[in-house]
Amino acid sequence: MEYFKLGKNGRIPILGYGTWRIGGAQEPDRSQDDYYIKALRKAFEVGYTLIDTAEYYGGGHTEELIAKALEGFNREDFFITSKVWPNHLQYNDVLKSADASLKRLQTKYLDLYLIHWPNPQIPISETVRALEDLVDLGKVRYIGVSNFNINELKEATESVRRHEIVANQVRYSVLNKSNVEPELLSYAKQNNIRIIAYTPLEKGKMSHPLLTELASKYNKTVNQIALNYLICREAVPIPKAVREEHIIENFNAIGWRLNPEDVEKLSKLA
Ligand SMILES: NC(=O)c1ccc[n+]([C@@H]2O[C@H](COP(=O)([O-])OP(=O)(O)OC[C@H]3O[C@@H](n4cnc5c(N)ncnc54)[C@H](OP(=O)(O)O)[C@@H]3O)[C@@H](O)[C@H]2O)c1
Image 1: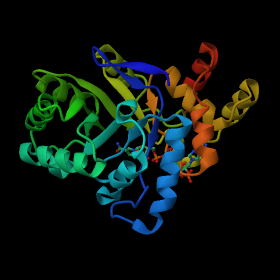
Image 2: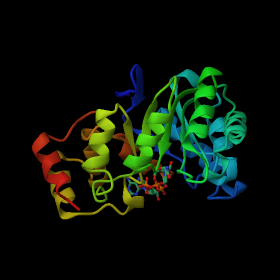
Image 3: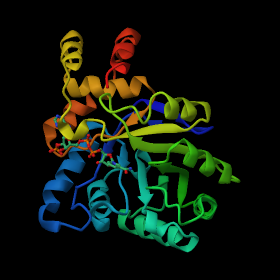
Image 4: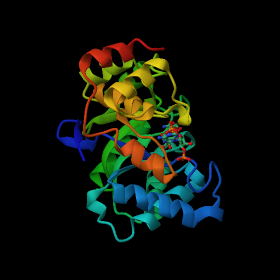
């Protein structure tokens, strides 16, 4: 696995594995557990090490399935991201949510813990204080946010006392980038904040003549070009895939790079 820098001294895999709708959407759906555990294990065998999840996913059941799938693997080889839901952003609730995620994931620590969405009702400084305490307690290695615009991101970084906000996870794909490029992306770069790109494949509906042209030029697929573009932008895409052929196809978006002229052409799309 290749890595990007994370914060001042850390590192993050350049490609991750999304888990939304694995084991249910907002509520647990236990009817296909074996199927999902098999898919997760396949992804780990193929080489994904960054797992993106949240307490919200499957009403917590997604985290339980990840724990089951990780049995027999070495925890230290993985980079687990989870997120705290916006109605749990008061100090004590953050600590409770983190403990519940740790328990469901059967792990002693999260590699990255994100505020899933901003909540203007709760001072960001209160939530950040809880996140920093979780780092001090050894329950979380890095902290960050998700779905924050530049102003919200500024407020969050200004609230930090002892640690750093290392990431902002936002919706970002080669066909949907106007909320990221250029402002948020360059603000993040200047402030050492890694952009993590969710819905990087537009939910499996990635399609554009330029992508088709480049797929043929590089002998790759349209989805691989789309993911590689984000990596060339130094963002971390976290595609979700349950089907084995998708898991493998997406993993082969790494190990090579588009040339800068083609990145430039793609940057003009959408
Ligand atoms: N922070 C947030 O608020 C937030 C919001 C949304 C998502 N996320 C995270 O980001 C992850 C990814 O986003 P997403 O799930 O919304 O969308 P996505 O990754 O863009 O798309 C997932 C869909 O695309 C299909 N797919 C995957 N690879 C494919 C391929 N190579 N060819 C054709 N179809 C393919 C999948 O099918 P199969 O599963 O059938 O293989 C699935 O239906 C989520 O799972 C979640 O972890 C975070």
